Length: 89
Length: 466
Image (cartoon, rainbow over the protein chains, first blue to last red):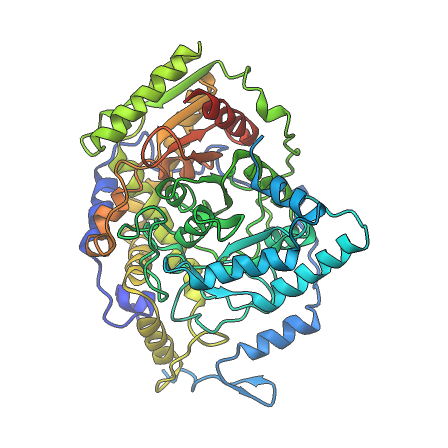
């Protein structure tokens, strides 16, 4: 069932092709010298402490926030968001 | 000490000018301007806030330092009830449902937002030409670009249309336009200011950054916006920077600069000679100056863009027109996504999304994406070693002077390379300030992580030295 996913499908952009300008950047990376290829064994990454996470709780949005979210719906019917026909494959 | 904020504050409390008149004057200047800096003015909101400030003053009440001060906002920040377009077709009618933390803090301090400012679409650019609102024109020479991506913000400050503006800096987007328009622009340490409500470009380097005409104004605005925020878990608690403390730079004993930046063939000869003259003036003040080794510019640019594109491909995948945005319906949901994104994203944004999906896909990720992460670590390690030897790193902001409008979009690879001197500090998440001195496009002052105060100290020292 494996399917090759081309960049136009991955990006949801019709007819998208890799660009020469960007490929030049990637060539530099391919040819660069590094001491190792993994970055997960050091403490330089901006990590969060498990003791410092925010509370896992639902915070109700304000009435004005909800109203604006509805105003932003591209299509709306009786306060509900209208979406295109779902994928049939 | 020089400060536009103090000056206006004094005029307001002395009743030399009313806040309504001040705001009206700025709004009119913004509307009449021909530099394409404005995506929308915020007349009703600004004038109603200004009236409240005038009433407070008339009633003899004390006002805070930022109360009544008009400021601009790059059009990538949420401000509830206002349109936030990211200068894109996709979000041209999008209304912010909530307000960004950094902006909320300024509102709480009484500052008055007057304009949403033109910029490169989603921050994708170094010239503010990648926008549906027309290319931003440079404040000094309108034939040249305003710089980017926060071009509208830098030009507005340079032209006095805003007292300060809030830009966003992912790879140089505050520092480079500040340099191109001869104003101050700070990229604080990553995490000092909450990113909540800033439209995400590359989350691991996105920073909120103030642009102003004096070091003191940068300090005032930075203090107000800084701090831990539960809505952005990468934020940290920082101490307030005092006005007095940044007037004394005696603790700065050594300054370094990257010799490969200066010896590069790509650097403009005048920028090079002006930079070296600055170095001599610093030495003459008894500060030790050291030449430092650093990564080649093409490695810095490629590492930055690889990671930024991967992150933006992921961040912008939510923009499919289903819940908001300029949706174009087609035969089914998948086609609607594709048509909406194809028709509404600019060529540069599409180029970056496609590049990002390339490096994140199987077969490429190890060779390019993971290697870029490893290079980023090596760059950070290099900085850590450098700051064991020097207190400050000084560098030009750009290798060249601003290009003419129309040139950057023709050659995207050249545009990426023009970011050579700014992206390294973004990857290192370091505090870096552009000062409008030293070279035609200014100088960058960088210190170790969280040492934003030291950067401001050195900026004051340079003001008196060169």
